[in-house]
Length: 519
Image (cartoon, rainbow, N blue to C red; front, side):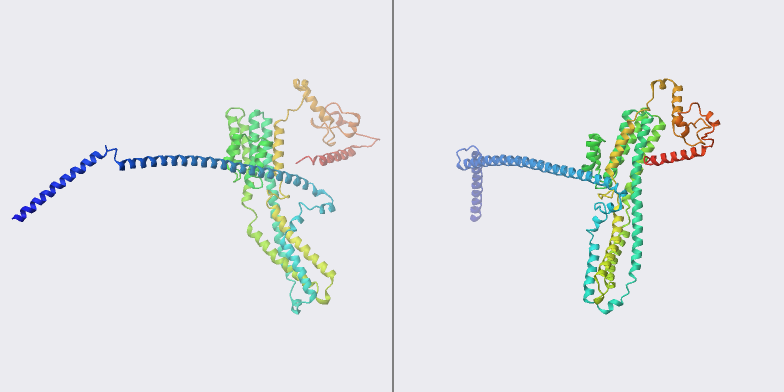
């Protein structure tokens, strides 16, 4: 009983002591915030201020460093872009000069076909010889022949003479047939694409002639032909990498012909002219819109608008044929087969010729030279045909035998502008006032022309040409009716047959001279 009382008393004392300690702790906490003289608190404040100042300085230093880095990066980027632009500009200038050099050589080579035989043989550039010198199959063939002749002088095994060497001619015959067929197909492809290029030029000329003769307003006519010429030039950009937008179209567009405004050129740059025919088709759409706007504004009638639209669409169709042909070249399977046969046939032909030229004591240098020439000519024939076929299969490359694209562009633009700037036929002022004088002028010109033949000089109102005998006496007067009743006599004999012969000769001479003007 006494033990329980003591334990209870101790527990109460512990509770009292615990309460006292809690209240004391609360007093310390409540008084600690106001105790500025506490050394620990002061130290913590000093440390916090130092950390804040150090952090702020570090942040400012970091911001300054970042700003400097950004400025340095901008400067470096600007320098790199400037270098790239300068490099691109230099590359464009170099490409433009190279294209101009190619065009001059191409136009000069076109005139060589009519030169004498020996002078033609002396040319090097623009010939197959400039390509044969780098052909490895040619030198492999000749090397094998030389090795066989060296071995033949030392003596070949006896079984070599028993080899059947006649069958090689059959292989050569088949290879020749395949090569001729290949060259023929490439030749047709070359002139077919040339025809499409000329058709593009012709459609622009037709549109310019219609716009000028049908009195289309000058502003609309100039813009229409400008768009058509721009489409013509842009078509070759996406067709071949030889004519890039930077080194070719930009010079043609801005420096020479002013085909597009800066805003229009920016639009074509967004399309990426070098990646297909989208750019030239956009120019075609612009030309069609120009025709439609002129019709809507009643500047041209419906018939003229229909004809112009048809010509613009024909231009697109002809340019599209160029892309169709580029998408389907000569089948690679056929070209690979020809190359494989060439590689197998020529070395074998050289070995056989080396064997047939004689061995041991039968060797003679004359036979060696003649057989070597046969091998060389055969190699030139086979390899040369293959090179010709490959070169003419793509006429829009950078070879000298390719078509003169830059000349086509320049000629089309210049001549279409001349058509638009053509004048009305000059007439005298009094002829413009009196229709009778105009009729008399036409009749007078008809009388003064050379004869078109005795059977046509009279009898109709259009048969007014004078005969050779009449021209000596002066132009005939009247409508030619009286001349039908007269006989051309000289010394009591009929000379009408001679007049016919002379008129036919004159006409043939005229046609012969005039044929050079018809293109």
